[in-house]
Image (cartoon, rainbow, N blue to C red; front, side, top):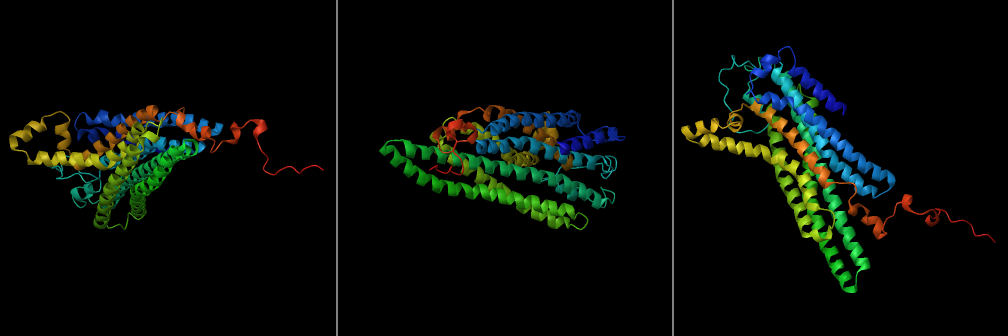
Length: 393
């Protein structure tokens, strides 16, 4: 919460600072209301996640399936954490844009869009340190690394949430098959045993993709943090190449992780009764898709626009919003893209209210099966002492 408030304070200080008029003058008219709405949506996302989280925390305190509710809490925190880190990225990037490190429009009369939208770091190559930034290279570089590191940390927690969802789903399937093996007929027990063996093989394959995605995100965030702490000595070209490798690995591993979890969810759907796996799966993977594929969609649209004939390009340019986005400079696109992620976090938070209710029946299936019963739910006469009382002579 403190980090979010600090990011909002920095953003508002920049938005209403002494040179705010010059800051907003470089944007298309609709960008100002979009960016000014981000603090409100960030706060709404945080508080909505906090309210829903408290309902699960209350169940944990009462002893209802604490492990399941704990995993749900970690998943529910995803929109709040992602929105907070994205707001921090926006604040640093906006501060960089308006701090005077960039040249004014008069100083740079022609700013052409990049042929591809590969990320914040390409701003530094597109905007020459020696010319456009007026010699303020190290300070500008630090702003960019701070902004990008915030996004890397957000993606790291995104991978952690996907890991928790995969673990929760696989545990539920395993528990359901174990119950059928214990309580069914002889034929049902044989079927359950065969499914348990198949589930073990599928689980091993699923963890391969999920664990790979998590490891890549840990390495990517760690590398960004290391570069941030040594911003004065970082080799920008080397940093860009390494992050490009990480992004490629992250996209591949995220595809593998999403596909593996989807295969498990669809193959064992009948053993996830009451879990509503499709809705829950969508709420988890949607931010993964936004983070790793959304930018590629915009880049593809820009490539298509650049290949159009002159007349068609003029028509596309006049399309509201789309035309502006395709003709954004790199710094303008990054500010728009980060703002868009904040709105999407709020959308995912709303979906969580339908997908992750704390009162769903599957939370209590563990207690109902008798495999693990919380001490708080046992009657007074049923509780057994840890040390047996001595038998009186």
